[in-house]
Amino acid sequence: MTTDFDKDLRAMQQARRLAERCRDAQREFANASVHTVDAVCDAVSRAAFDAARRLAEMANSETGYGVIEHKVLKNQFAARNVWESIRNVPTAGVIERDEAKKLVVIAEPMGVVAALTPSTNPTSTAIFKSLIALKGRNGIVVSPHPFAAKCTAEAVVIMARAAE
Image (cartoon, rainbow, N blue to C red; front, side, top):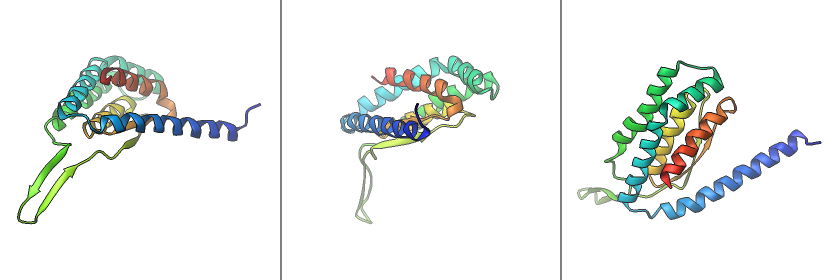
């Protein structure tokens, strides 16, 4: 018989393993060219946009929250508009110089981002957080709300496949 304590230990170990795998992948991605980063983000954006309706239907079915059409729009906005708003933001190397202050700002990845997603907007939140993390050459581990685990996981799988 499994105790709750054992289940918690297994969950912690699984989270640790996922974070370690993410960190390994992120270390490789940290040196990606701007062209590669933008190509990955573009592919993720397109895949998420194309799956917007299916993900909205899954989220509504799983959680019982919201209006499907509104969720479709949120998914599309997260996939397309968020990407368009950050597409030309520099996230690698020297991104700013202030000669008067003798200041140089150099963009570097942070590493692994932990992303919590709510039950109310599980797929659109996973989409926009993933795009933002990837644009900065970071890895991301998405932790879904328990009431929205399946639809959030599906959004992540879609984006991961596109990114690869």
